[in-house]
Amino acid sequence: MNAALTLTDVTLTHGDGPETVTALDDVSLVVEPGELVAIVGPSGSGKSSLLAVAGALTTPTSGSVRLGDVDLVAARPRERDAVRRDRIGFVFQSGNLVPALTAVDQVRLPMTFGRAREHRDPMELLAEVGMDHKARRRPHELSGGERQRVGIARALVTRPSLLLVDEPTSALDRQRGQDIVALLARETHEHGVATVMVTHDHGILSHCDRVLEMLDGRLGVHVA
Amino acid sequence: MKPSFLALRELSFARGRFALMGAVVALVAVLMVLLSGLSAGLVNDGVSGLQKLPVTSLAFQHDVEESSAYSRSIVTTDAVEPWREQPGVAAAAPFGNTLVNGRTDSGVEIDLALFGVELGSFLDPDVEDGSRLAGDGEVVISASAAEQGIDVGDTIVLEPSGMELRVVGTLAGQHTFGHVDIAYLSLRSWQEARAGVRAGDEVPDRVYREATAVAVQADDGGNVDLAAGDAAAKTTSMTLEDSFGASPGYTAETSTLQLIQAFLYAISALVVGAFFTVLTIQRRGEIAVLRAMGASKRYLLQESLLQSVVLLVVSAAVGIGVGLGMGVAVSATEMPFALEPWPIAGATLLLLGLGVAGAAVAVLRITRVDPLTALGGNR
Ligand SMILES: Nc1ncnc2c1ncn2[C@@H]1O[C@H](COP(=O)(O)OP(=O)(O)OP(=O)(O)O)[C@@H](O)[C@H]1O
Ligand SMILES: [Mg+2]
Image (cartoon, rainbow over all chains, first blue to last red):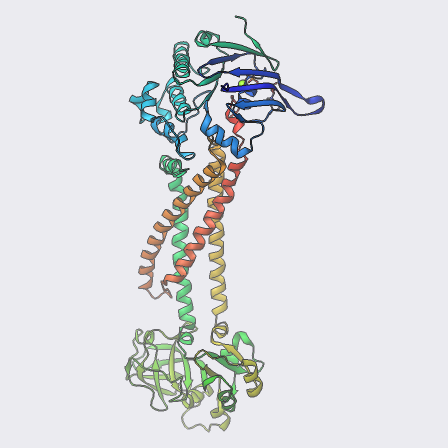
């Protein structure tokens, strides 16, 4: 069976000539369904670049990126839109919800992007992340942790095979951060999602199945 | 794909902003209705009497200044016969036109456009009240002159000649020319009125051979070769519609109003465009997130265009409603004002079309938002 996400010898550089910056240097990574992988590393080491390449937001300079059986490097822009819509869920730093929408509408929103596939029930999903009692609230009426929970429900509604999470706890206090990552771990394991989470927060790593470290664009095993 | 889901929720969430923008569009629509009414009213006042002539073209004096043909042209009645003989001509008759001042026996002062016609010719008008022209010294007048207090049976004394004209009938509806009510009279009386003949004057024969133009009516669906007719009769022809431009003030009034309307459309398109430009720039972070989540460019363009269409249609409808209400009030006054459905419908379509075009140009910048910017803190 195919792994959910396979990066092979991926290199990403910005600019050219003497100014060239190597954001990803010969990175290889395999993530299996139901696995939560954390990526740590200093600022500027290439963590966001890795998410961008895995999430079909950037095409790498060289190497191959596969999502199940889909080759993301060969895909055309429209196909990449469709892959992001149908197979990838994003959880952003501070939730990044749409200000105009209530919590339940945030979760429904991805269902309006394309032909309805086998979506999960938005209210059930809100209940799963513990937000069903605030389904009618808009983002400005929610706390940071609550927004993050709604953001996780929104990312999961299309039953993605890959969940990409960008610093989910940076805006939260310690306890709420723990709760959010525990929720991510549970969703990952129960629904067989492959999850890649970038974080600066070493206190949450115990929830993760594997921890990798980026250093100057190279990916290695994290030594605690 | 269902962009209306997001479009309508954002419209209602940001209703304050959208209402402000809508108010501007509604005000433009009010102005548009009023200008359209004023424009139609001025056209009516200027040329409604010409529009109601059963005429397809008019043959004016050879080499006449086209912009003032109605006041300057003189043709002789000899020019009528060659026109009658042209192929495709159903009827041709002399037509006289001149502006005069008068006063009724009951003391009402009035400006009149005298239309001189041969009695029994195709130009001789039907009346709604009273009787048709039966002889010299009689006039039938526009219904709008009756509103000023002139009635069948009154006598109008022309100034300064003192010539007397008896009102025998009124026409159906408004017949005006150059903002002045029309009075039809016999060609012979018209010739005397134009020459300023006083009772007892010796009148030169020449006076009784002159008219302003030869009025020509083509066969139903037929085509008259105007150039051939002009060559035969030594005249300069204009179609009836072209001749509107030769009536006093017509071109200046209509082109001024058209210019104002064009500015109005341009302003509203620019304002709508600017509004959606600012809105799109403010939404850039949100758009990047939506794109990262897999919303296509098409989805987001449709979403924004739908918002602009809803905004424009709702506010134009409100504005037109208010404009029509004000228009009805203005119609009741002396102002030249006429609410006509087609010009207003056309203007509305133009307002909506240009508004959507302005919004479309603005929201195109959605396509330049890079979904990559949704990651990290660089929003
Ligand atoms: N568009 C770009 N143009 C040039 N250089 C870039 C660009 N994007 C990223 N870089 C560079 O690539 C490297 C990796 O950046 P990246 O954003 O992946 O780091 P990061 O690990 O996510 O850092 P942080 O923890 O601060 O978010 C950095 O040196 C950065 O300056
Ligand atoms: Mg980063």
